Image (cartoon, rainbow, N blue to C red; front, side):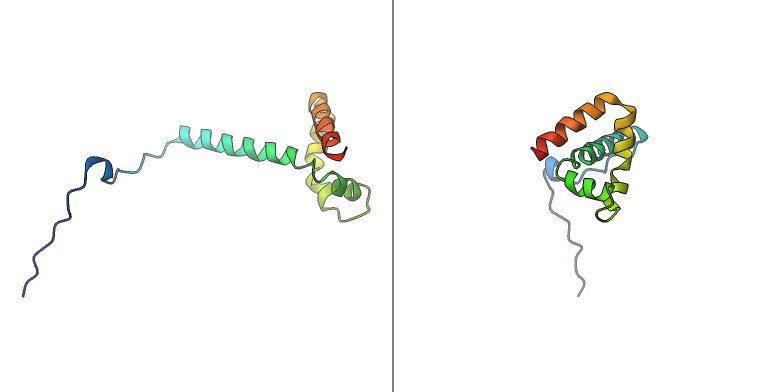
Length: 96
């Protein structure tokens, strides 16, 4: 008993599988730039809720993790005064 080959039912055009989009450097660079920007913004915004942990860590009252984690932000604030003003306003928003 031979089984006859079964044909798949014809799908409408919109349901047919489309070939995957071609990989491109331009898309990779734009996507990477967006992801890094989002991570950097989240990093800067995370100092607000963690300010007191950073303060205790920076003044050697607790684990040095937070002091080390926020050192790049501290250095960037020293080098860029407008960033420092914005970060100080944001921290005051959280702690007051």
